[in-house]
Image (cartoon, rainbow, N blue to C red; front, side):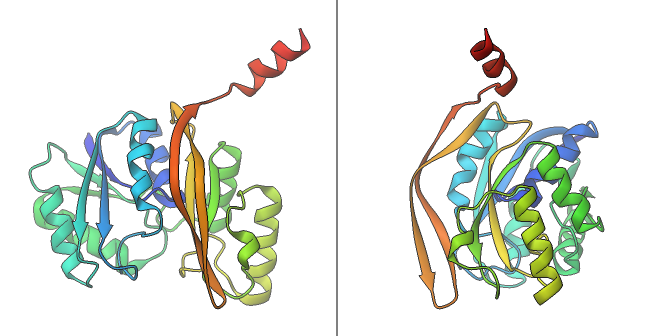
Length: 235
């Protein structure tokens, strides 16, 4: 089945794309909606401009479209973007947001597409473990909840980071996957990337008790085969 995948550059859409690939879907396009407001109801905002590099790293054509960021009008913006594409389905990274999934399902029903949500209803720990074990390179680029300080910006998702999130979940009820908007992420590398994203220049924007990392410049670089590199050093 030919499909398009909604991507933001964050971990959920990247993992949903990975699962869709493993299930045999033919990914014809990546689709990024660029909200004109920071408080978009439907779409991820920080560093969305990096989806150009994300798509290039995947080797999949990218379709970008602006959206008002206004509740409900975003749906029409997405529908206009999808109509006319030679696809039979849409892949989304919805995990537990009924608001997001219902609206994507509704759009798909209206234009005759299948709504595919590979992560829907999954255990949060399973998803986080999969990101780590499958070799996704994920960094935190936005923190908006008590317990997540400035030191989390730019931090990489690994076993220790996951343990710290588990502790914050226990203390403050923070969602492990940031489902409540507690944090935002950026994927720098994935199993299906032909190259990885390298950040060249960035800045931190901090306001009160929350903030985000804004990437000013980035490029693609060659991926290093760690095993081959290690063997070469030994010889």
